[in-house]
Length: 60
Image (cartoon, rainbow, N blue to C red; front, side, top):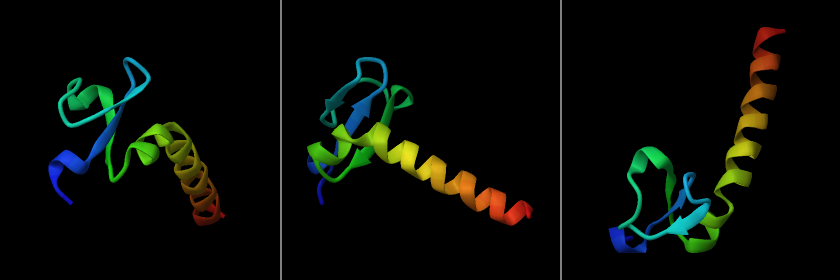
């Protein structure tokens, strides 16, 4: 995968961006496809939920 094949989701503009875009501090990624970047917020929410559940199991 080359850098040009990577995509980011910009949290400032709520859009998918190619390599040249907003600063990385304002983005999630990189992702392997435009579609994966478009689902970045959903992916992050699912991962956070999973990690929260794992933390509960660890604390029990």
